[in-house]
Image (cartoon, rainbow, N blue to C red; front, side):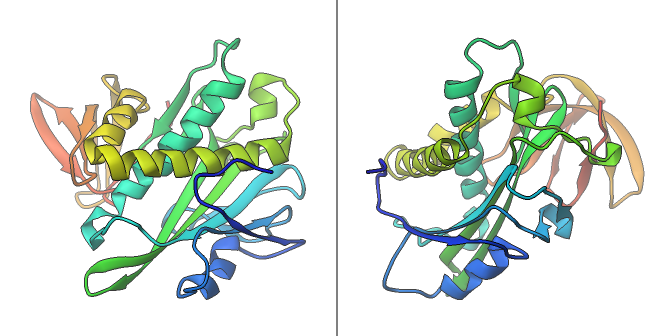
Length: 255
């Protein structure tokens, strides 16, 4: 029997365009919480900013989790789920695959997983709202595991390319769900600051001078990531001043 904090209802699909799209039919399901939709063949996965998440059949993890918050979350607090799932994936990979490797695992704000400056995982969070409160949340997760070929423009890699290990997809799948539930439980007990501190400590490019593109002004700036706020905004220091950005306002340039 798989170990979970809350039981899950697992739905496996041979093929689907997007697990997040499929998951939307369950957001008002009152019979079961923690519904997980998993496929080995996602044909049109969607990432942040409606970008396509390209994946090869049976080589990666692509799944979505639907759940209802047990602690009231308002619309402006949806960023907390970014922290929770990013921490969970980071802790899973760090515990089971990075002990004897020199590669450093990072969380790229708001919710990408980066190893060796390459993206290996992405997250898409969607929610349903009722009376300014979050009713249900869909967390879509994509992890590159065995895929070895990527277009250069993606700046992506996989766990196999980086760690040169054999991976059990079932094991990794279930561990990510367990760590997600565990991290969410930590949030309900200890509060947002507890999970935000871990997230900040593993933030990609933190305290390093980097180049960013600002969409609003159509300009590039040189700055240093310092933190994130308690509302999920990225804090960048540039010319001894602090600036705050929402995720659609700024773009990282690949190192």
